[in-house]
Image (cartoon, rainbow, N blue to C red):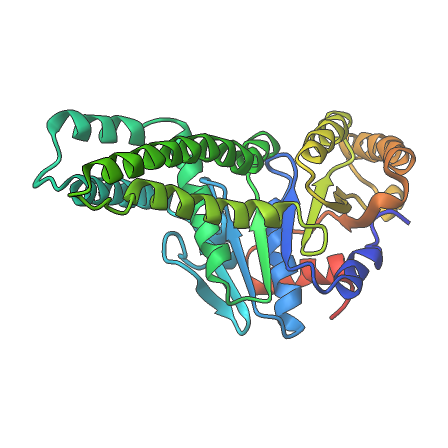
Length: 331
């Protein structure tokens, strides 16, 4: 019966223990953050050290865990479970200061010229800077290590696609710049040999680019690693959401993100039919029955769980545990 969680979602974690990077994607407002929190809770209860973190500037992990964790780094919620919300604005300010310091160090300046400072300020206001800052923070989290599982609470689908594409875009851009720097370095080496009276200084800019490239490659390789990464789409039994999910899945496939399956959320119980309920709710049940059939026909055995509508908001560990039980079976 629809509305009852399937065991296959739990089996994904049992059968593929090496999949340490867990991502939930879907349209905004469908409960990605609550699913992320409940999955982290389930894994932590099973003795795994877990970090759940949000890459959404409008993150709500603080609301769900009832803890102020925004911008405070990994915060312990309970034994084995840590949560983190990224403060993009602070990261951007850190970027600016790092850029200033590198300019001073590389070029031996005492102060930043006014025109360069204006450029630094203007670049920080670019719309893509927030996503870039979050992406870079995620790279830091992944590179640092220290957890058995990393749960990504992704931004809504459109932004998530942008986030996933950033690694390849950055990598291509840095490849071009790195190649240019290497060509310049070869020229400098020839010039130094001809001069013979001046040693060639280490190319700090090239080394910085190579460092960034290494970090990006590590992060992007995780996103497409079928042995280490599990990506779950979740959606509800509504026509537009089903259509959007199918389109998004095709786009994600272009980035070779390993799709592990789909979860259907907010399924109304069939038992409501036997109760005296308002007309609009009866209509919702009829619509749901229609689209659950569409889901069965379209996604077939790729559906891992049907999770029922919860009786109240999922906030606090008690409700998170209740949702985790619905998703994975009683723990």
